[in-house]
Image (cartoon, rainbow, N blue to C red; front, top):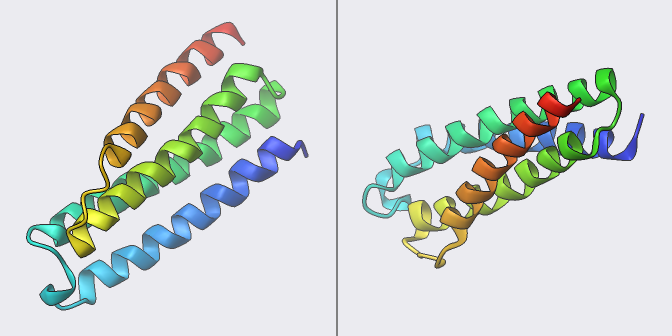
Length: 125
């Protein structure tokens, strides 16, 4: 199995694990652990993280079927980076009220770019 496929599958599994754990914490922690409006913000970030974990699994499967196409592989790696930036940025805001600058928007932009790159990669495959 190619290294990038293993990376994406491992990353996706860990991202999904963290999303489930974050969902449990978000559901059960008292309000005092969240900044104002943070619980809802955390839920949205957790949903986004889980959807992208599933998407990375799909990309890995596509890479196994199609071979490691450069654009598809790059889209998966960008999706991993965007997921980390977006999730960490939103978590810092949701739990501690810390606004880490453009971290979450940058992660979101990278995620959008990853989806576009995946579309182009699939069309070219």
